[in-house]
Amino acid sequence: MPEGIVYKSTGSWYLVKSKNKFFECRIKGKIRLKDISTTNPIAVGDEVEFEMESDGKGIISDILPRVNYIIRKSVNLSKQYHIIASNIDISVLVVTLNNPITSTNFIDRFLVSCEAYDIPVIIAFNKKDTYIDKESDEIEELINTYKMIGYKCELISAKYGDRVDEIIKLIRNKTCIISGHSGVGKSTLINSISPNLKLKTKEISSSHKQGRHTTTYAEMFDLDSNIKIIDTPGIKGFGLVDITKYELGDFFPEFFEAKQKCKFKNCLHLDEPDCNVKIKVKKGEIYQSRYNTYLDMLKDQNIYRKSDEVSNSES
Image: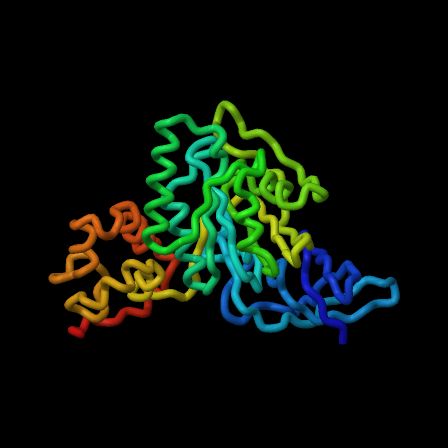
């Protein structure tokens, strides 16, 4: 049975590449993911088995095991999720200080999602050509924040190709997903990496300072240097599946290191005595913005199994 990789999904039809040829495929009705409730059983990046029909189109009969995936919450279905892409080697999160604003809460949630599914991240701070002195200082502070935690950061101008070569070096020979809000310059960055693609781009709305969607569905492209890039629609929020509240802190690298000296083994870093994470927050050794995101995520009832309650025990 032929095997291939899903390059594009439009909801009902899938573009599958097999032996350097593309095939339009549909899905067998019985395919469903066993572990999580999603709105899309098949995602870009999936390795699939398919059967050919007499009309030259294919029917996907099975999904091969995934190495990892990134998901987001479905917009109107709070208890369901949408798989953005799977089998990812590295992720580039494109962020902007303004036009549009990318909050640290959004950045942190994306990083936690990638940490949970073992996907390395490059944070590309875009539109450096538009920032005035004060904004440049803010960007440098943000970059230092995430570099101190251990994340790779690049200050770029996708529009003018400034330091895009550094991004190319980091994603060479890899399957890379490009993520971020609408309007931050994802398609512009991809066009800078591979000008022949000529992906559509749009200016952000001047009245609302928000981007306009130019990518409707996730799609993978083959570029030079053996790079596979997955372009994604603008994303507003991310979700985590089947993670308990006691595990959440493990996906904040600086928390994981600090919690080894917490008094309680299952410390939630809230009101527990002798919490080393809170001590480090007070000392400024863990950034307050990161701790605030952690608290915000802890309140999100969708990120963990409510029934999985474990009593605290001293380590």
